[in-house]
Length: 252
Ligand SMILES: NC(=O)c1ccc[n+]([C@@H]2O[C@H](COP(=O)([O-])OP(=O)(O)OC[C@H]3O[C@@H](n4cnc5c(N)ncnc54)[C@H](O)[C@@H]3O)[C@@H](O)[C@H]2O)c1
Figure 1: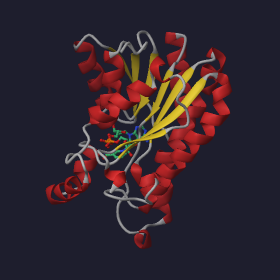
Figure 2 (figure 1 turned 180 degrees about the vertical axis):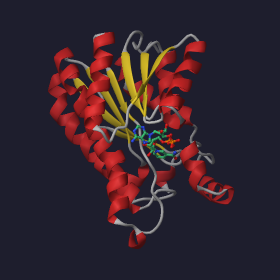
Figure 3 (figure 1 turned 90 degrees about the horizontal axis):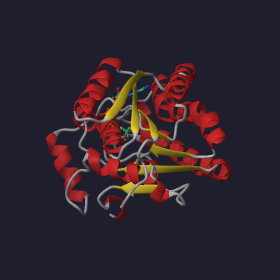
Figure 4 (figure 1 turned 30 degrees about the vertical axis):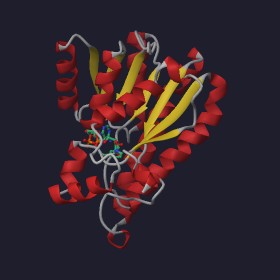
């Protein structure tokens, strides 16, 4: 299937590592010019350089998604260089674990700032450009914890922040559709990434895998494939969708 992504300009947040790096790799492999936007500038540079050695078109940009002004500047510089911005993937996110009873308001502010404001800030930064083009693809990385109030690894705060991402996805699909912009989300369950391994023991991974009908964790590439499809011309009539990529976990 020809995805029609050759020459598209893509901006992927949190793309220095994990799922974001796999998304950037997949989009670049399909011919996109990919901007790897991350608060870890050194790792973003390393990831972009490793893609370039494979002949892919990738550049790094240092950005913290909690800072709206930094995002506006970063997007301005992308558009000055590449003259457009076709695809935004809002992937940057952080995990929160533990009981609500022990969570502080500072922890709520920290997680909501990245997982929810970070998505809104990223979308706001690209909107003028996408509206002027009359074309855009926005894909947000939510989580199945949005529909379960937390879950396998994230707590109720994490689930709440991702539920906000789902609401943002559906509302913006309605608002931006007339401008030729689609807005969708992918909802992973548990993926094999640094985020997961920083919070789970091998024993808890085994327990989770035993509940997943397909009996394995997602790979970052599983998530990236779904994002790449939603970012492509083949998904031009899909908007406001929240697609689980969870090995069937939501059915259990
Ligand atoms: N790993 C999972 O099982 C899983 C499941 C469901 C959803 N998700 C979501 O997928 C996304 C990626 O997760 P991952 O497992 O690859 O995480 P990860 O921790 O492995 O990588 C996250 C990347 O985002 C960057 N980042 C974090 N905060 C940032 C900020 N404020 N500004 C810019 N960059 C920032 C980090 O530097 C890192 O490069 C997140 O939104 C996460 O909530 C992950």
